[in-house]
Length: 365
Image (tube, rainbow, N blue to C red):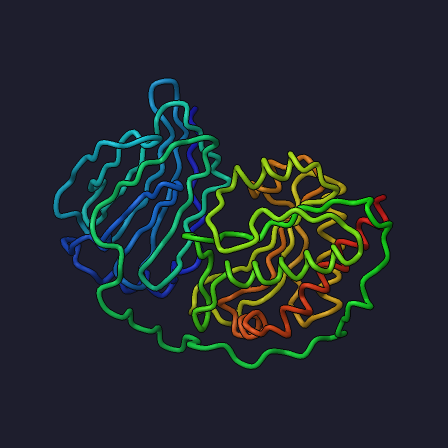
């Protein structure tokens, strides 16, 4: 049987919107305003503000490719089919039931998606993003409508508009805190998430994930190099780098450890959600690396402990060395956003991550 699964929709799927949608007339126009698939395989959506979306995946067979579809409230003005380009075979806009618009992206047979890597992310009140990670796939831009917002989006009642004051570290670190390792013995790949056309999460005060993680990663690299560790970075500036090239670079570099650095996000209506999460994939050494980094951060800065867990993120699943992905905090969290926007706090984070990596290398080698 083909595999069918519901995708995770995070960021702006607001529970309060369910009651609002229930009171809408069934003949209301679709809340889908525009969509576009870019050359990097990223689907961008513009919708009415503050709505819920449902996203699904269906595995293909020898005749039909994998399909992803997203349901929007409201009926389409006209059902239609759009001939696909590159890896996309066809895009359909239809009405599976009264009062629902369905956007279907069907891929060419043989273009296989991993549902574990598909995540529909809300990046603003009326904007969503979904990346299609397909190895060696060729995407050609296509879409309908205007993605740019035509007027300022309404602010949610009670939502945070700017970060508060950053918290003081628990145990401030300096470069003298960095542990000793044998110089020239180790190589580490650092992977600052997102970049270029992909800003990642956008949080309170407009702080962008791609900027935070690049700053932290550069500082981690400098600390590691000061201890004689060779460092390779998947990006060292604000450029677009897709997931497969990141994993390939790591595997070619044959490092002792791979660390991907990210920042989390959820709805702007949930500023109480804060905390540190660190991930690994089916590897005892990967778990040790993740735990070393996670515990070092918790000893250094004030952060809710959301745990070290196994996950199927592409860059830690497709790399052949001990690998970890760390989510530094929630850009949409009132506490974490203030910290992550603060250069002094980011300096402490970078030292804590470097200490965690060096402690792992010292014990592993």
